Image (tube, rainbow, N blue to C red):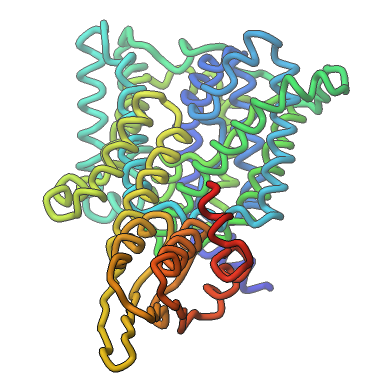
Length: 495
């Protein structure tokens, strides 16, 4: 227990503290921007980011992952805030948390195994594109100073790590932010700053119970939004966990993460914050800046609040160009550049799944839609591929006038038609044996195809024997098959 606590909190103190500071700086403009997207006061996003990051550090299932207010969640809140106001958003946030805790106890985190690698790659690439696109408003209709500062920021980010000793100790995004802030203040450059994004909070968050009537009508208003928020939040969190797992070569507890996200969102809602989830961009900043344990996530949350409350006079001076440079670095680092090279090497179906996921996410700005489209496409391609791996051969025994059909492979909705077409029903034989020793029947469509084959042979006057059914196949055939039941022909032909 003590060793686990040390590993989770104290195994990388310097790296975690520095990475947490960098993440906190990057969280501020995003939290404010996401609040504006959702149509609420900037305080709502900042309080949410502080609360979610702190809570998830203790209860989450993935050390080193950053959770806070996110754009994907903010987009789903717009209509609710516009039509019903902030109090209903806080109520929806609480319900979102309850749904996510329920998902954790139902072990729905395990559903991530149905998301193929090509869908994850598409999701990551789409997110990288969205992160980059979100920076474009800061780079359009601006003075040359903005471009110069952004270019200088990128130069610092990519070149500072090459400096001997110091380059490895201090994270370059932090150096970028501090350096450009000093330059902007010393030379009094007229450039857009964090202070221009909105008013920062000046007090600690306080406990708030949503001022909404506790009745069925309220539930019906917030439930659709809460379901959407819970699904998108868990999807993005599970995806982020997968990516951080890969980057750090460690594993995460997905069901604990589901419950942790739920607890964090309930905490956020009770402190006047909006719902949030894991952030791929900030998590990658954290990992690339040296953050590995829960301490980095806690530091990000605590330092965010300290920055906002104590250092607000300095904080508002940070040029947006510096943060744009950091986010461009994140988008470049997030994008899977190998996936472009792999377009030539990977199967067409894999490429289609990846590209469609990217297109749908970028077009709709909704991660859930893109992942759903990718998973459905991957499932269809898989079903089609497996359906081809079914073969029916036959041999004839003249002595007994018996035709034996040997079925090899998987029989289900995709291959059932091929299964039926493999039999010669017009052949005049006395006996037909269907050998299923090396076959497996998966669904009622497959059972229906077997019924059809047996009844057609019997109608032509042949005796039919089925042999070799494995236990699982026999169970489904016995339960749903009609070929060995009275009036089978009448039942089948009635449809």
